[in-house]
Image 1 (cartoon, rainbow, N blue to C red):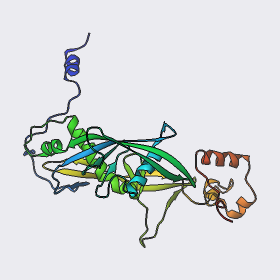
Image 2: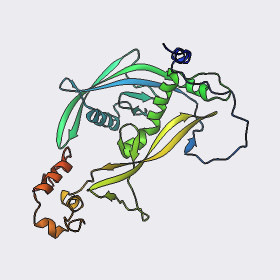
Image 3: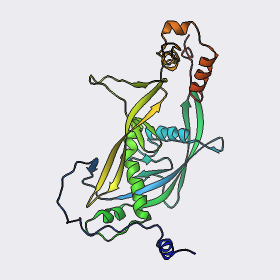
Image 4: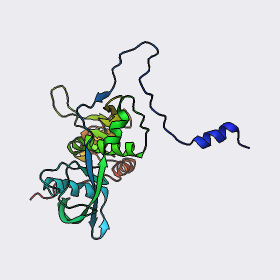
Length: 285
C-alpha cells in the first residue's frame, strides 16, 4: 500500500517552482564572478519560422546533406537578399519574412551541391509555419513577474539559442547542437594541436546558451574538451599509434620502414575503422 507521501508526490507531478517576487535579502551580499554575460538592448520581437525539407531521389536527405544544402541556399541568397535566417537542424527562423507568402505557403527549389568531387541534386521545400512571439520570455524575466515557466518559454529559448549559436557554428567545428571548437593558437598566434598518446587529438571548446536572468537574459558560457582523429597524412600518425615493444616509446620512422607485424596491422585497422581516408594523388597528373 502506498504511503501518503508517495500519493502526494504523484499528485504534484513534475512542476517548476515559481520564481520569487524579489531577490533574497537575508545574509550578507557577496560579489561573485560568474560565466554569465548579460544581454542588453533586446526588445523581444516576433520571429517567423519555416519548415525546411530536403530530399534526394525522393528520399529524405541526411543531416549533413541538409546542412550543406541550407548553407548553399543561404550563400546564393535563395531566402532573400535582406533576411538573416538561422537553421537549427529542423526549422529556419528569421526576423524578416521570406518572399513565399503566408498561410502554409510552400516554395520548392532544385539545388546542386558538390560532395567529394561530384555533384548531387536535391529538392528543397520551404513552408511558412507562422510567427513565434518572444514576449513570453521577456515577461518571465521581469522583476516581480508572476508568469510561470511553460512551453512558450522553452520555445523562446530554442529560437534564441538558434540565433546565438548560428554564426559561431558556421565558422568553427561543432559537435551536436552545443559544443563548438575554434582553432587552437599558440602565444605567437600560430595554429597548433594537442596530440595525445594513441594518435588522437584533443580539442578545447566551449558551450554557450541563453538563459533567463533576473530582469534580463544572460548567456552562459562554459568550456569543454573532446578527442578527434587528427587530419593529415596517416604516416605522421603511425609513430604515435605504434610503440617500441622494448622501450614503450614512440617508434622512429626508421623502425616503421622495417614494416609492421600482424598485431600492429590489427591495431591500425581498429584505429581507422569508420575514418574517411583519401588518396593524396587523386586529381594529380
